Amino acid sequence: MTPDATAHIDVAASPERVFTLVSDLRGLSGVAEEYSGGRWLNAAGPQAGARFRGVNRRGWRVWPTEATVTDCSVSRFAFEVRSLGLAVSRWQYDIEPVDGGCRVTESTWDRRPGWYKPITMLATGVRDRAVTNQRNIEVTLRRLKEVVEA
Image (cartoon, rainbow, N blue to C red):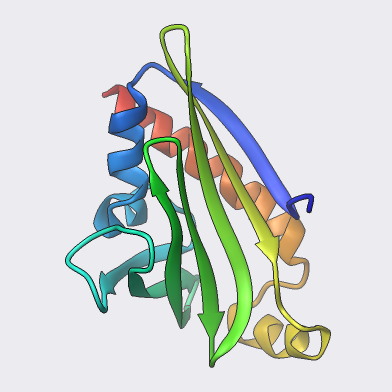
């Protein structure tokens, strides 16, 4: 299935360095546009099946989510997000070696049921989630590049 939003960037860093950043809840919150932190619920760190509670912010709006890691390797870190028990999205970081470093592709899929979208619009202040996520991904990848190349 085609993602609702996706972008990639080449970075002068090893796939391992990028994986370490995107799979670390604190590290990811330092580069992500809306995700502002979280904590592991059933594991000490990233691994397939691990769950974490995340906090997202957009302006004065704050909302919690719960995510389950589905893929956890140097080539892919991905998680499925739930809110109030409902599937809302999938986020995925694909990391592939290229000359001089690696290419990082961030993608997301909107999993919200149609009836739930107006509720999340009120909670998040986002009218068009695909457009907003596209912008957020582009900002996140630029920040990620700055951090891993520093």
